[in-house]
Length: 199
Length: 199
Image (cartoon, rainbow over all chains, first blue to last red):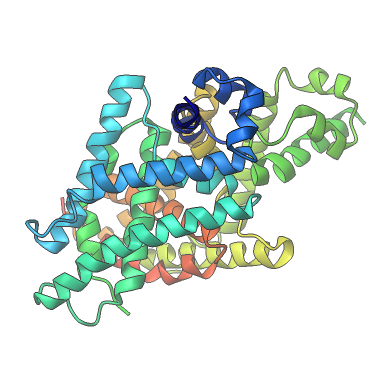
């Protein structure tokens, strides 16, 4: 039952904080949602921040498994993986909108926006996640160079970071306009941006 | 003194909420910062939301006056205005970092990220601001087409929205990495993205 309680707290943090925001949700609400006594919370996590770091680890593992690994796949030409990443993200946000009425945007981008200026450990955690995400993109770009589909002049690390920034930006706009297809409309643009990058 | 009290509340909201977030700052803190009795607050604003809408109006007026109007200027070739917008944003965020130690990112993007899923009036206010910002970019693109510097095949409205999304995305990354120059490194890319947009 102990492991199960910890699990429920992590899943509740994903359900509440990773959709509504860090400040908007208190430990009390997380405990209520998880059906856990508030006193037990601190047995499992020293602080709300520690729970959120675990929730981010869990959500990132899911994100790579469900969204990134199927896209960054050898069977797809490397630059088309980038297009596919935008399309899959669009479809996922459309699914969230259909289920909950809202485009939620990126759980990592949302927390980065909210917390980067005032929680250093969470900011650092989020930079690590963005680094790993950038590495997925960069490996596709490297493969494109190896296959002769991308100029050797393209700076791979910086371009990969630009692609992720672009995806985060279109997710923010999709969230603001509550329009998931805004992400899909920018998919081909992302590929073109890579192909036309200059040093 | 009455007008002055209202002013101080608006300026305090800009100082606190537009940098730290909506949920992170309460009416009590805004009143303390403004040196206004909490009872007086509701004489001027029916709710915190109403104050924030006024603060957004004020901040948007400043943003256009200080950042956009000097850049979207006839003396600058139209597509270079886009590059300049990224560069000026980078310099502004570098100034904030030098003064406060932090890249704060976009005050409008920050609130859009935090509030779009759970405050409909504020979401609508922010979409209006993004619409006006997009119109600045679109007018530059139209001028570029008129001057023969951009293909007539480029869809102006959608491309202008993509440019703003890209700028919002690089501001988010700059905030997360606390690196204002990340914005500048993407300035030329934004121009190339426009020139290579396909329908």
